[in-house]
Length: 120
Length: 110
Image (cartoon, rainbow over the protein chains, first blue to last red):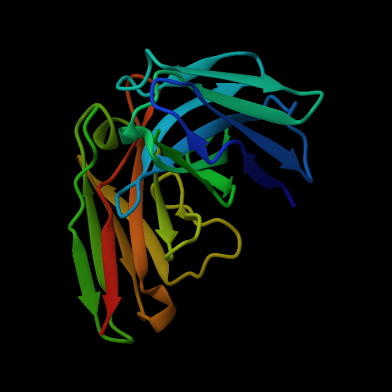
């Protein structure tokens, strides 16, 4: 079955760009049937939806993060990526990637998550 | 967009039924049948339990059921088991083509 795996630096300096990649295995990323999402969770807190990208290039972002977020997809590598600019300590969180079916709600499956700490 | 409102905690004894509410607005929960529910155990990724308000993914126990009335969605767990102790989050599509999560509910099995 489809599996997702996040990767990227675990430590980012304040004001720098936080960059993560999600690799899809066991299935196609090229299918137009899915959106590819990023979600984060600060330690001990709730989930926050960051944004999503479709392989057509269509994107949607959380209004509170929109000015700092960009996403991209590389179908040849079966990867999609997140860039969050001007990082601050408030961006310290576990970051998850997740697939969303185009015609229904629901994020499934999820990656295992990766902790990113923003600190000097 | 504001987080959907969930009770901070809900508890029940084994075998009992509990219900978790998720309250939003006409621009999210009340406007679309795109509400989903997630179970999260400590240190793990969330798991999809309900999608499109009432639908269960393959492999999810039929003890879990979802419903919606107006701007409030609900998740009911019947026949509560020890393994159901976890955090639960709702999520809804919004009128801005974005998603918003609930504040989260900690379920305790007494």
